View 1 (spheres, helix red, strand yellow):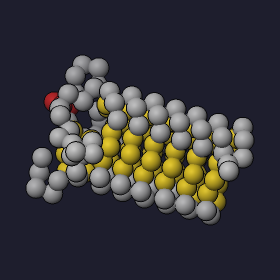
View 2 (tube, helix red, strand yellow):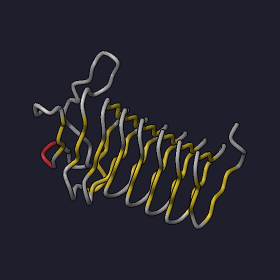
View 3 (tube, rainbow, N blue to C red):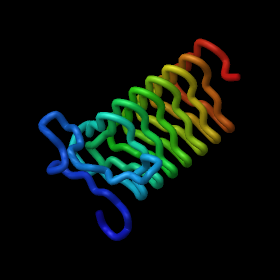
View 4 (cartoon, rainbow, N blue to C red):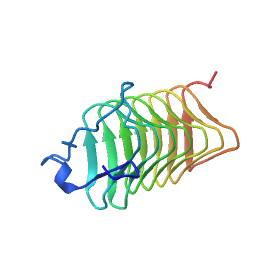
Amino acid sequence: MSEDNILRITRDDLDEHGYVTIDLACDSDGYFPGSIEIAPDLGIVRFPGNVLVRKSIRALSGSGIRAGLGIKSGWGIKAGLGIEAGEGIEAGWGIKASEGIKAGEGIEASWGIEAGLGIKAGSGIKAGLGIEAGEGIEAGLGIEAGLSISAKFISSKREAA
């Protein structure tokens, strides 16, 4: 890890199936204490469990993030491809993906959520400012934004509480 506390994941850090093979050296709460940056053109980079980061997660152009459990960042989450989690996705600031954003549970950001394609959550989607998708937005429970919601189609089974 470099002195600026950024863990840079390269092809050498992945197995043949795209799973991260290095130890994230997390703190006592299970969070990586800095930021994670995924090198460009790695495709979807897979984490078997949670990805918990105190600062930001950034996958450069041609790379995306998939976690078996949840993804949580104190700052923002950004991917050149898509972002996917078996459980929830949460960011202290914003979430942005050039392709889609998908979570088995909820998606939440204090600022905005933006996807070039669709946004899909098993439960709710919530952003302090706006939610924008190039295609559709779909949530099992509710969709809520402090400012605006924009997509070709929007679907929610229930209103957010």
